[in-house]
Length: 355
Ligand code: PHE
Image 1 (cartoon, protein in one colour):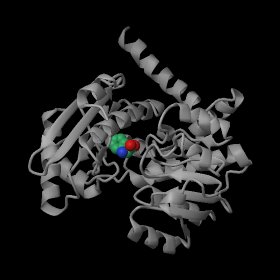
Image 2: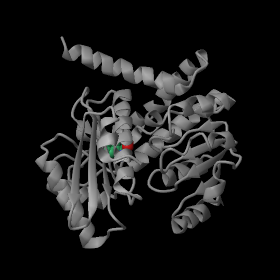
Image 3: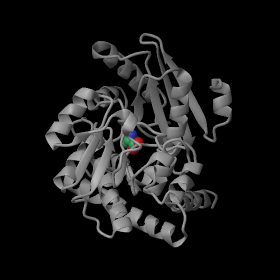
Image 4: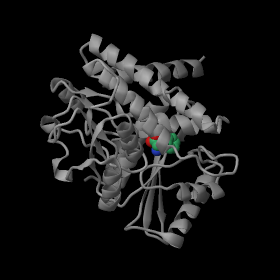
């Protein structure tokens, strides 16, 4: 992998902030991709990476996804993402200290970047950040963080039902087989919702304790990590790491639909066409997983009633239905229809700012 300087100069974003947290040996990258709709914001991911370069690359790719996500739902934020890459697992006081220092750093940026939960960060971590800075999305009246996970899952569920409608003619998941990769904060909720609706579940997670627990609760089958892509199912729902759709995995897939919550599911843009060629309907990630961002944005503007938030998140199903329709009329990937939507919103904002 290239050096930081080569990676940043090849990236089409605005800026990257890099901080080394000496007490824990963690690298912190805040990638600020785009300011068109407002100052960038996005979740903070906490993950051990093979090297700081991988963490930087993840931050930059995820930040671009956030630009698309905020634009697709037309919320007034630019795209950004933070990645905290510790050298190994960090718990207890060391973890609190790290998130405290990170919160203070965000406060010193004075709103240049605002954040919330992402893979690896817990509500407790976000609460610690929230003690140090105003720039956290979705704190409730008691200064406790709203968990975006269930809202993301709800949006994915409504999008998945629309994908079913577009392919098999009925939006009812009863009797449909769904492979959920990752049963954490989002995938776990999605699996439970699908199970309650009568779907058959195949589950996979690197955390074997959690996997066993969810599988026995839902009477679901477990799939080994090596078998995920070649396992026959109706819907593959990636709800963990990104880039699981690539030139190696797409030829193996035995599903009709890919609809999950993971960010950056396609390893490269050519993968969108690879899916079209295989006759697999792909729900663009930043559209189907926007429920969390939507709930945090709405909570910021005072809508904290969970029933109202869940109802708003259902608009994701409607947007996806339109995107699927447009893509099918043009015989193209839904990714292109989604990108046109994003471009329209960004163009309108650019035009308004030069008036
Ligand atoms: N990290 C989640 C996402 O990628 C939720 C989130 C959205 C957190 C926006 C902060 C800001 O959508």
